[in-house]
Length: 267
Image 1 (cartoon, rainbow, N blue to C red):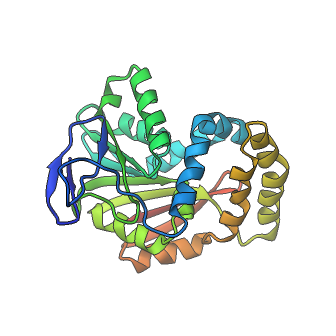
Image 2: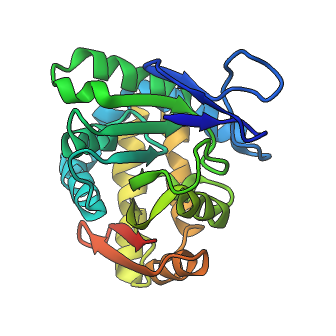
């Protein structure tokens, strides 16, 4: 995998945990999202990291595993492909992609939270599947992906687009590093136009998600969900965004009874 620095130079990375090189130093250091609220968002996901997977299982009654399999399936990733999981978190989608591409393929899991990546790496080391050794973890910037143009055969992004501060820039970067004819699948909460669905989502956050998160000492960390969904894009707006940055086709699927959504876009 060639990872480029800001001067366009490339360095080949062979480490399980990979960092983007600075253009002014020979040492490795992380590239972080550069925005006013990036540090707050990064700190939030770092605090959540230790219990993130347990909470997902509890809050979705395990359904998030089905949604993630659907998202990976929609990418069309196949054996031998080189694929990217943006905002990979603790690695759920990365591991599913690894199964798809096999030991002769390559998976890059990218996130801006070092704690999430450390947890993903520990999961990788504890699992016995040989194909999982094809995953590299990169601490990096979703708004400035450190990869060459047209590099990946498929890309996923799970619960990440809603949290980036510049969604158009994130989509432009995904478009840039994706091969022509390849597909990105972006899974997230669905911002519904249906008042009933929106009301149900907000009721669940207030009466289920936050109380459960409180038991883990993370009530404030999960209160942001309602606001972030309100500020997110509807399915039609996501389709328009994808087409606007150059994707040839885009379709948003409502899943999980309309509570979740998946944008599938072809370059």
